[in-house]
Length: 317
Length: 258
Image (cartoon, rainbow over all chains, first blue to last red; front, side, top):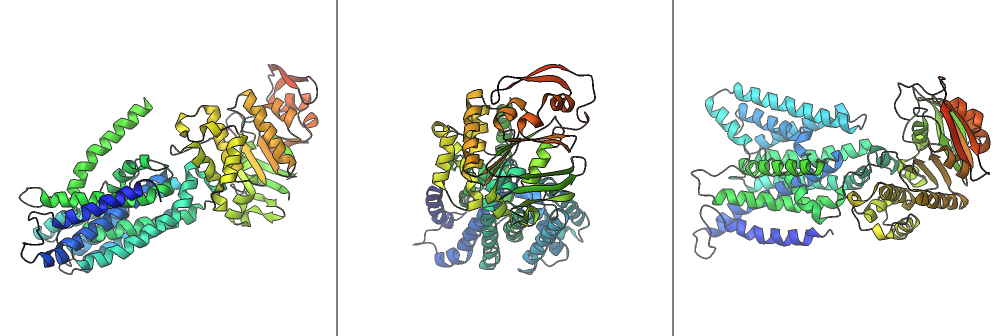
């Protein structure tokens, strides 16, 4: 177990009860009417979902940064999140949003399509540059098709629904969403853990990594599966939640031995903590409507990204 | 336990190169820039699949060998020395145990000691000098206890004392039955410390034999395009280069580094 893991476990254990009680209306289990129902059916699934999605995004970010050997890498680079978003937008466009299961299923289909395309384009060679470019192409294509769907929305309501959904949120999520996302995310995180040894080898560059037994195609397969399942299921139930995969590995890396495999578990825990705290803050903030989680994390993430760039520039100077 | 290349051809880089390497010896691969030294080493390490020909380890084609088994048998040190994250030296060296899927702490400790890295074991790579970094990277290869050590310019960033210390270690590794193959630019090191030298020019094997023959004055003059002669006694020779000759004996200048 790596050094920051016990601390992160304690922080998550502290944050969970606070998150359950926090909201526009703070719950006092002793006096709030229907407290048990609110906790069990509204707050708890939302809390669990925040933990699940955050863990998936954190672990994916750590794996991506390890794979691309670049601290600026993000799970979004693979094009899987935009692919999943495109699937979800298609379901909204077709008017299937009323069904609680069709939208996430469409999103998962979108993620699967992006994964298959990525594997088909880049999987034969195993080359990192081609893989990255293929991911960026898929992200660009999915983004363009999403914009097209918005511009051709059948009515203003559908357009508004699509735009709002794309912002990402955990509002009004149920246990059905948890049962959909949690197993897939856990399976995805397991795939990333399997890739950990090969990611460690990549620290030394491609040739040295292959000399240590790293197989580029095997690694890509585990990564596509890992990032696809975690990010795809996250987008399916919560929309686009950005920056977690970028920020979290940076926050925990100094507390690890900096090898990619040792970063995965702390990043998963820190991602879970970050999304849980951000989602709780969204509920508590005294705004007219609840701040969307995706917006909140972008508001935190963009300055962090700028700070990171400035620090890297200082390092280069 | 031989490592054998048969008619290796890699378009634009190698042409019909054959060599059977025996363990227990230090073999140096020499040649001017662009001669194909690094490409040959990568083929011998099983990292580059040749267009024609084959590389076999104990008679098994490297292409068909399971990557993990190949990695356990052949340790490869690339020329670039990249380390993506700021690992501590001990963690970096421990990466050499990845093919064995164990921590191999005794092997890691031995590799650290062999390259005089004990005092630096907990230091991050970013705070190492060029020579210290080169030693740490080589220690990573040694930690894997491979039967074959293939290193591309392992001595280039080392000071003289560490060059000699490392060569003594490699000599010990060879005498204990391992095979050592080094790409070397420094012809004097190859002359004085290798048992066998393979000279490449423009992707072709020019000579292959004991250093006195493979790096004779005439060969150096012809392949490197310099007027040169060896001084000193066997085992302590120095190359005196008189001048660059105005002949097109060198490799194609348009090609990059080998």
